[in-house]
Image (cartoon, rainbow, N blue to C red; front, side):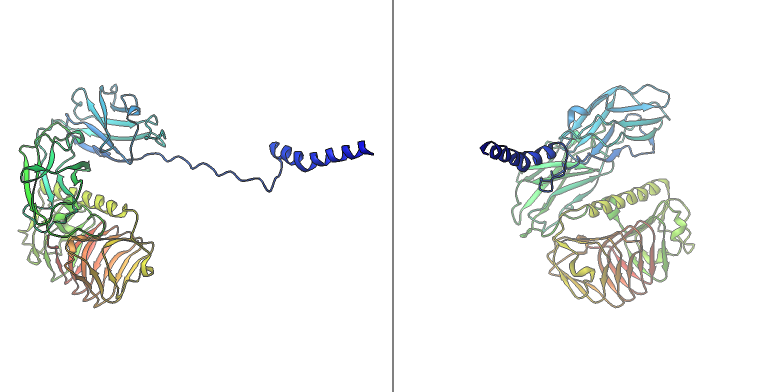
Length: 487
């Protein structure tokens, strides 16, 4: 009997404990077994910008080639094997490949001039990895065509923030300069972009991205103090041409820090009060203060905006504008065509920058109906459209910033207004609108701020705008007053 009891106990133990373990090891069912958490898929870096652009024509023969990455990269993987430039029916160019860690820009410097009038293909292979070893998802390939001449024109500074002699600059602000062309990023650093007060250099960091150099002080600036910013001739473009002379300007701080996100850099799009890709239509008579332009559509797409209605100039992609027949305000020469085309590119860059801001302060506020509300500075995000049925107030100081990311459209009712309080300025208000229709400002309404719209902007009868209308399709006016914002 004792033998049987021992046998039974031993087999019960096997059944109760060992059998489930064996089943699990063999892939059998075990409802109580923990489910392992899957490892997250590694995320590849992406190329966010190139110089030259894809399909760019007439590239100077002494140019270098760059690619900007979305994140920190493993510089050892970016080399002459993984970053190549090859001309049609030619061997791959020999050159020097470097990586600027401050800006995440890879640079290919050819060992000799490009062949004139030749199609070149640039390839970044999947050997390129980010800082944690994740490779590009696929080879990144783009092309350009060389011109027939070398570039000997020095780069120029096209705008500054703050502008020269500005007063009341925010204590926590960054100082930046926009340039006329892409720069060699390795030449933009703390030795070539400096900020000083009474000849004492201010500690800070310098960054460069998409033709913009930025100096960010390590700590807040001192109130009511004059500072001097300097860009030196150590800064060069992608062909090695240096600034012709140092660029020096001064500004004076105020007494407050800015609230809200950093302002969107409009670059040369900020030189226009109205900018469009597919034309500007108008029912006379409107009153427009500031330059307007359209590209790539012909200048004829602005024919019903007359020179008598604008304090400024009309820039077109060709000489097609006829207006009322008297066109002293029209600029349609080749340099003007290039100017407005570049502004349209900058408009797209600014739109993407505004859309790409993260960590909103307010999400889905009032489900998109901001009628009658008072909105403080900050980054706002809606997955819907925005409705303005009654007056909306934006309350903040002159350095505070509002960015509105709107997945749908803006619909503003007749006789409603956007009002500014506390010294808020229209230049610091950005409406990024990605809806399929765009922006509709009602009859006898008033709008404040810079609109960056993926689709159209319609300003209905007698409405007024203090800001900028920047549309990637068309702008429609009807007896309106549109005024560029005070700087």
